[in-house]
Length: 319
Image 1 (cartoon, rainbow, N blue to C red):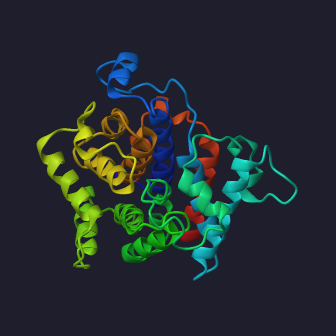
Image 2: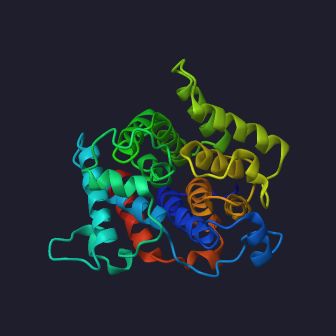
Image 3: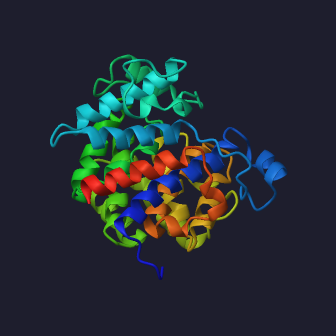
């Protein structure tokens, strides 16, 4: 990478890259690889035929809002409140008189296949540990912003892990969410993707208990050295419906690619939860390469101006 992105370029790259991966993958979510290949060709999803984002980007933006509104030491409560604002966008037709922040933007009042655990957890008040059996990817796909604020990587991990439990009580969901935040935090300070993943695995291994997230990240690392990411190669790591698989697929595609477009294309070109794996991979490569590294034709994603505004606010407040 010849260009060394500025903090703003990395923040914007993270949020915009996530939205791009989300939109690319949302075009084919729930489709088999055979159907994807028939519709998009053997090279996978390389076209942004529809620029619509899903609940993945919606919730990522609300994660950012919570962090921006939080007083020091009160981040958990502020993030929980932001997610409750997101819930309003999923059950009301339009903003109301008490709407605030992002919940005043009408374009966010769209139900784009929101995860059941996110909805049920918030309807029950977002209590820590709700849905104890759920390790779906609904918390990891919204956790990149925890790595964008000015925290030590271990603090970013711990905060994302705690906030995962607002909707997903399973430990693996928390570990995977924390791991994404830690990876993003290391990339924000200029570390390589290899170093970021290595440090995250080492941090997870401080606990002697067996970890599904560690196994998934090690599998991603091993596969990236054997199989260059491409159409449907991510199938070896699962389909991405659960937290550790989404993280592993995204990390594999980022580790094994030297081009962000190739990485995101590989992350969405498989039969599975393509928008979530694409969103998380987009977060990672966007932080790594910055906004300039993302393909211009894909930047016309829905909500792009809101994404850029949020990025500027994060840069001003935390960097």
